[in-house]
Image (cartoon, rainbow, N blue to C red; front, side, top):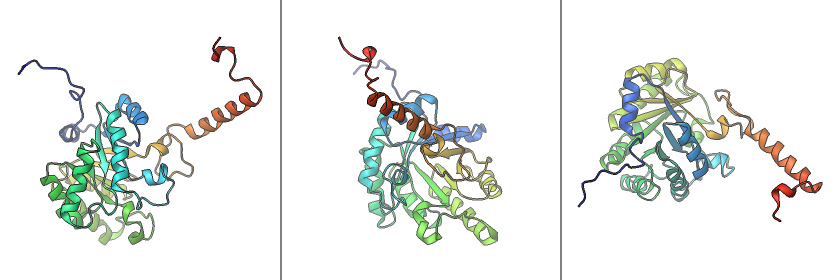
Length: 275
């Protein structure tokens, strides 16, 4: 067998250990959702650290009101596309609702499928203390797990809507205990969503693992946004979202220009036709 070392496309891959080093060095972590090859490749080239194949695809890709209907098969399908487009970024796949809340063995098998079939490097699941055992079992199967506490969209019915979590003494302590449980179970990082910024700062200071914030203030170890929100492809984005582009408006403009030129027989012109 040859001992020649070949350069691999994963040579400079971001890993879970990279995120640990980023936290130690106080280097903020960047995370973005992606659902297909094209945008995964663009975000990867731009330098995003983590690509999250979010179950938010239910909202922004499938047009559903909640994330609850997404299946494991659909998550695997989208994860395959994203993993093909990412040569540097760490690819994390959401475990959809119902894929890990039941039997522990089923949760482990679904996590394995997202890695083995989908090409994910890690999985993410929602919940704190109640998910301690399933996180530990998946980690025990050699699959890195990212936790998610605070506003957990899969619990929308239990929460009575998408509400800020962790307000008041009782609410605050509950989120802190959830974050501790996720770390104790072996997760390599945790998303803090929709919690007061002082609470997120306190959790970030206490935990050894990195925190990734969304609607949780600037003191987290990193930040994540849904790509459609960042790019301005959605209408009515949440108040904590900053739109860095207005691609929705640009898409409308380009499409209307195309319609006009076709109807006026300006397109295709000689430049865009074969002789």
